[in-house]
Amino acid sequence: MKVGIVGGGGRVGSNAAFTLQLIGAVSEVLLLDVNRDAAEGEALDLRHGAAYSQPIRFRAGDYADLNGAHMVIITAGLRRRPDESRLELINRNVGLFREILGNLKGVALADDAIILVVSNPVDILTYLAVKESGLPAERVIGLGTVLDTCRFRSFLAEHFGVAATDVDALILGEHGDSMVPAWSCATIAGVPLKDYPGYSKEAMDAVFERTKNSGAEAIRLKGGAGYAVGVSIAQVVNAIALDKHQVLPVSTLQTGALGISEVCFSLPTRVGRKGVEAIIEIGVSDEERAALQTSASVLKETLQKVMG
Image 1 (cartoon, helix red, strand yellow):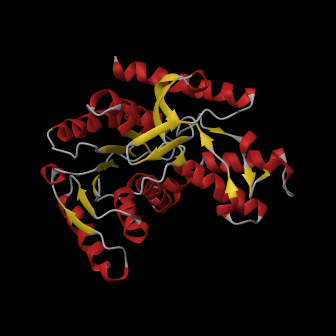
Image 2: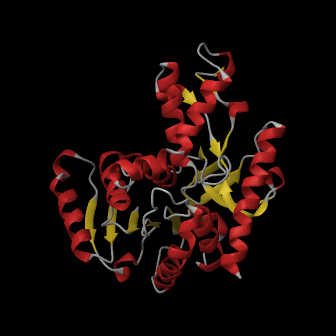
């Protein structure tokens, strides 16, 4: 599988490429960036590690080099300020994103190509890609709350003193301030979270707040997230490349699950080589359902401003 990363010279794009080098199931990764030297440098550095990693071909290039690509990952965008919500990025990033989509329309991508949107605000930009990329909705996917879910599980594991891989818990809705923790279906090795030793509502609320504020904290401490988002991107890429039929909380066009439609945000979604295979309408509490509907409303208000 040939993959292109638009923004591959930046922190997120290069970390995604490095994670794919370690655990990826693709054959070629093309790095595109407005800073061509940065993309060339990242590709060179990755090639230096070829002897001890996955057999992936890395190179830098331009949009014309994306011909035949099976997936395009869009990470390009301006960084969020520490005191800025992801939605406030919209006025600064929509123009750039539309320019990227316009460039992609001139590329002869593979017939079954998939776009993976990572740039923020990811739910808004994913919706724009659904409407303006020319690809079927099932082949436009946003990273959504995959990163939030990864952080959430990691923090829960720290609290309970268990392996993070034993934690099965989801963050749903917007990748942003209105994200929703799905407490009603959270488990540790199959044991409901509320039944596990160490559970308390106060502790869980603290874990969720830490999860929600993690992005801003990473920006404050080191300028932005990198490693965890790279791992999260690789999860989605591998689910597609290996046709895993894996359930992930990616951002996709909603068409009625939980009474929500005409917005892109995250619900459990089965992902495979053809992209979105199904959106899973899980059982949630009344409180969680209401929170998800609120999250959708928040995004729709912003979409009205963007779409005119």
